[in-house]
Every structure is written in C-alpha cells, then in structure tokens.
Image 1 (cartoon, rainbow, N blue to C red):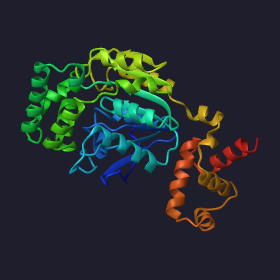
Image 2 (image 1 turned 60 degrees about the horizontal axis):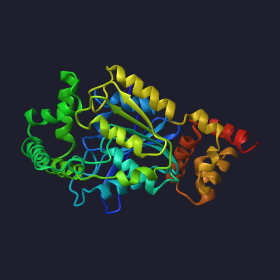
Image 3 (image 1 turned 135 degrees about the horizontal axis):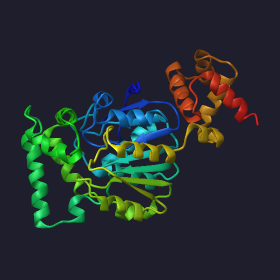
Image 4 (image 1 turned 90 degrees about the vertical axis):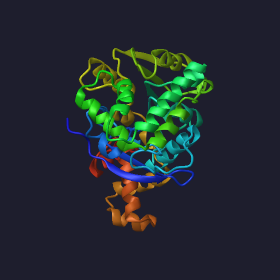
Length: 355
C-alpha cells in the first residue's frame, strides 16, 4: 500500500515555538502525540514508520507533528520540558480544528497523551498507548548506578549524535529496534542525526528520566487500550502493566516482539494493527452516532450552506470569511462526518438532520 499523501502546516505554541504538523487520510480524527526522533518529511517513506502511518491513515484522519526541538519544528528552544510538550499537543489539536478525537501515545508520547486526556476529558474519545510509561527511569529507580548509567547514555549522545560515523547512535538504535534489518538500522541511525541536535538529544533524555504521571492514571476517563512489546528493551513490559492497572477499565495487550517500535515484517505488527483498528471508532460508527454534535456552530452553519448548493466563494461572502478559511472548515467538517466530498456531505445532512 503506498504511503498516504499529507499536508504539512505550522502552528505556534504557547511560547511562540513553531510546530510542524501534518494530516493524512480520511475518517474519524486520530492525533498522535509527538515523540522525539521524528521528521514529518521523512517518516512517510521510512522502513520503520511508514507501515504504521499508512495503516492508521487508512481508517482515520491522522494528525501528527514534530516535537519542539525535532524535525521541521523549531530546534532552538528555551523550554524543553514535559509541560511544554503537553502545551504543544494542545496547540496542534486546536490548529487541526478537532474538537473531539482519539489520541495515540507511543513511548514518551504516552505520558503526554495521558496528561492531555486528564486535562481535556471532553476532547479525547479514545486513548491508545504503546510502549509507554508513567515513570521515567530515574523515577522508578534512582540509585547511584542508575544515575551513572543515565549520564553515560547522555554523554554518548553528546559526543556522537551529530557525527557522520553512526557508531554512537547505533547503541540507541539497537534499543529501539533490536530486531531490525541492516537497512532499518541504517535508516534509524540517520533519522537520529537528521531529527535533532546532540544538545537537544541530551536535554530530551534528561527530561524523559524525570517524567512521572502515576497520579494522573486514575483520572483518565475515556476508553483506553494499552499495548506493549513483551521483550521491549527500551521500556520494560512492567511499565505497560502499570499503565493498564492504573487507568480505570484499560485493556492490556502484550505484543510478541522485542522491538520498542514494531516493524512491518514481524507477526506482532498485524496483531497490533488489528487491535487498534478494532478499538478506534470507524467512520460508520461515527456516522451512526451523532457526528453532527461534534461540529462547531460555525461549521454547522457552513454545512447548511453546502447543502443549499453554495460554492466556496458564495459561502465566504455570506459568512464574511476568506475562501481559505472556508476551505479549512470544509476539510474539518468532512473529516468529522467521515465523508470525502460535497455530494456525500449533502447526503449526510439529508439523512442525518432530516430525520
């Protein structure tokens, strides 16, 4: 299956940092909380990420973004804290125009997604967590040996992250995808170099080690699916169990894999995709529910004008909006209704509001 097309845009976070985000696919909205080591431009074609992005975009409007300090987002940032990451997710969700959506958190993105879901329960319909954790490594075990090991890893990143020689970065690659092919390892090594600076890599790892959202777990209100590779080297299986036991009603699915990031050629990947697709709302389920209730008053007004046969220019004139704003509204409306064009939207209006 070819990778989905995407449109890259930029949003401004609370402190002025520019965040690159992209949307691909059609269907109910799914926002992926950012992690480090991402690059919107390269991930769609990568042998490590493309199967996941393609698989999710086949059923949803997938919104993802580069973390501050990574990819196409601003690298020179003063604040690289957990709170800034949650604020960035807030900014992207608002920029994408999604009032209610499913939320995906992978690895470091899991605690960010949890914090957002607790802070905005009215906006998160479903929560999917993979390879995640509630406690950073120095929160769950803060001994002199653990601190020394953490600082050794930081020093490796500081010395070798930006070099053309991938030897230093290979250490991190084998933690993320120990079962990867030589091609996948080469790609991930290069992604590490291209996605962020050595200084930012060290800052990221030091902040990861201090994350602690254990107190937030009982406050998650939405249906939650927790998946975790049984033999994950980067984050132990016990951390996934902690998430599932702490979040009320969460379902826990261990995946038979040793990779932190699941690869397309391993059996666990298809199990993962089947579980996630079965858990997330489908376009049909949204259609059978009250999808119109998710629209803002402005979007409902605009949808009625579409049903009357007005074109974008006429709608813009009627509502005193620019045509670009009208086009953006229409994109969001179609995504929420699970339709692809005006004709389908008009049918939904007649079938839905006409009842």
